[in-house]
Image 1 (tube, rainbow, N blue to C red):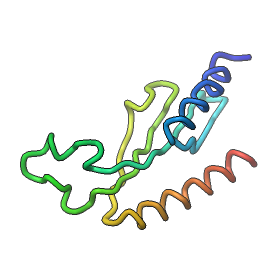
Image 2 (image 1 turned 45 degrees about the horizontal axis):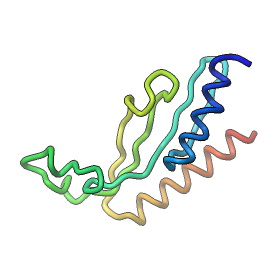
Image 3 (image 1 turned 60 degrees about the vertical axis):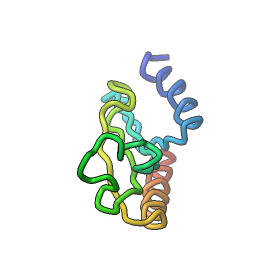
Image 4 (image 1 turned 90 degrees about the horizontal axis):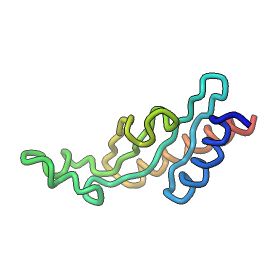
Length: 104
């Protein structure tokens, strides 16, 4: 089994424990991406910003991890949402799309 395939097996377990959803696996290019729900205050981001303590009211987010194989959870962007419900709906839709793509 290739090193990348072993990594996918290991990271899948780690992601499940941390509630990170794997959104894409590309075995040819050795690429694996994921996403995770987050909250501005739980991440304690308000402590880092002196001006905008509540991110203009957009406190519910989703971390989108670019490539977990190259830089686990270090390479990411965040999508911010005003309500938890909005964030959760988007997360759910993207999770369903990812699950369908990974199965088919």
